[in-house]
Length: 296
Image (cartoon, rainbow, N blue to C red; front, side, top):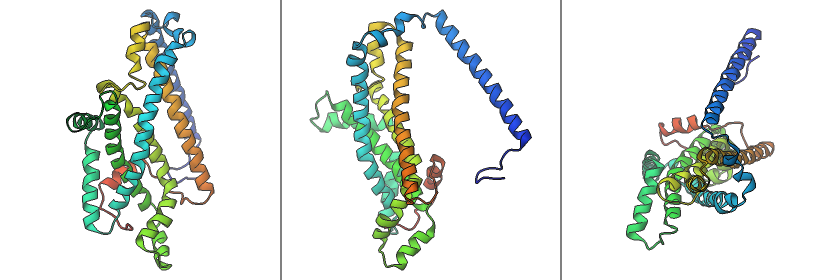
């Protein structure tokens, strides 16, 4: 019996997989035990380093919750701007007109090639030199600017890959009933490509949330990870604080991916999908290909 990706394992292969899994679990357990023992020797497991997160509400009300809200604010604003902008750029890359496709492609490749941290730093410098944005909100503006420019370019490739993953018969059928190219894209291709794009798109949204931490490190944005410095200074528990912050990131991102999985299931049940799925590798492959057809 086979699947799309691989042959179903036989009895020997299953036995090997169980052996490999057992070895991995044992090794992982040994590494975890060694790390915990080392932390215990350094006093990092002492109760006084962990109890503030349970007994002192100010750790949450003064540091962690405000930091989380700032992270969510920067991430959500960046998502709201980057998703439609990326969709427009992706559709532009699919255009049959070179005067649209070529400059849009140049913009996308330019911003994909620059590290997001550098875009944040450029944004901060531009706001200082050419705007009157107050200094207290300038880090937030700079972080959002960098996230939008970089992630809109990545989302553009996700949209392009999602549309080109559809069967060519979708476009042919739309042409057969007299739909124009723009109508075909808006009413036929994009709605069906949503389920194919969703896994890669959600992965990029998770990246947006995590990349807000860059603004806290170098631009002074009071986001979640930056609160580590203030909590550690007051409670002398750097390792414990980092662990708690990491757990908060895991919970938030797990909630986002869980919602996306639920939404993807609903979309597939509504028969708007084609069964195709676009991953990160597909987006990278599409970036090296041509402009593609089926655009506007």
